[in-house]
Length: 278
Image 1: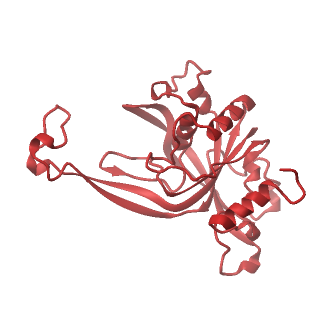
Image 2: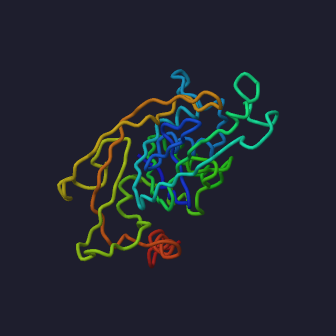
Image 3: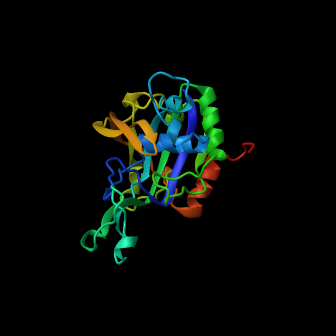
């Protein structure tokens, strides 16, 4: 395996799984379709080509579906509901058009929708590739994206620190060493560890992260998510369900680096240890 680490943090993120027009939800962590879509946008893959048809395995979007993701939840954030109304208060000739091309009447002119976001959330994501050339291509694209990137929804641009580290032999195992974007726990810091949630599209234990008997056992929760992309074209988006594996494991409490500049300083020290050549 080879790959890179992404740091996904912004004032708002939204990773929809069952979104419809009137109700747009968000998952508690980045979805597989959202992460593949982020890489596709960085590479400049048109929506017309965002199709997994099962015949052309060399198509760039199809190759992206082989990438494996493991998400480390640095900060879970808080779910925020944003209430929208569209089309209210206008004369009928200016209201929202119907599917048949007519205009809504005054009694149905206002369309109400609810959109959910994660606020103040932060995630570190390991992207594992079996193809080193594709890993390099995607890392270069994230550094200089062809199209603007967003964290699940176009109104949610990522923070400045996006590509955390590239060229890793085992990016998933490296999640145990990256500073955590969270405050030091107030209660019982003497315990020496802090519980951190991981979500992966592969079974645990995390490959390469060390012998399983070296760490306390923890239950693995397996659920299903409807976020494996089949087609992401403009008017025809189709997904398959896939298993999602989650576990809470202890990491050293010293990894808790806080927010803002404190976190950036910790990342700089992690990337360039004292005495190492930048």
